[in-house]
Length: 145
Image (cartoon, rainbow, N blue to C red; front, side, top):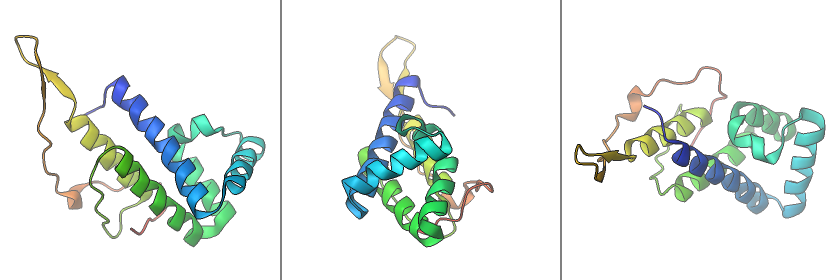
């Protein structure tokens, strides 16, 4: 199941804002600017690319802030993301940051407007997921909620 271009853009905008807000709140606007400067000059990643390169971004956060710091920042980013997307966040031990991103995208896809045969739009009901069956992304870092 994939999300529409509009939902994809909405997701990426929400992710970029969640990253900004979490780092700004945890540290300061100056740290946020410094982090973006480091990302750009040392890693070749711009602010606008972060939503598309989340695994790289998480690795960079781990390099800069250490594993525990990256987990704290990641937790705050994910909570902000879910809030911005009007999704309910449920912390599940063992899930990784990319797993939460995948779950959010699935939930967005499940709420995509669908066309009825008569051409009128209707909203698909959000199906409750058994989150324990969500496949884990083995390339991601462990993320504790």
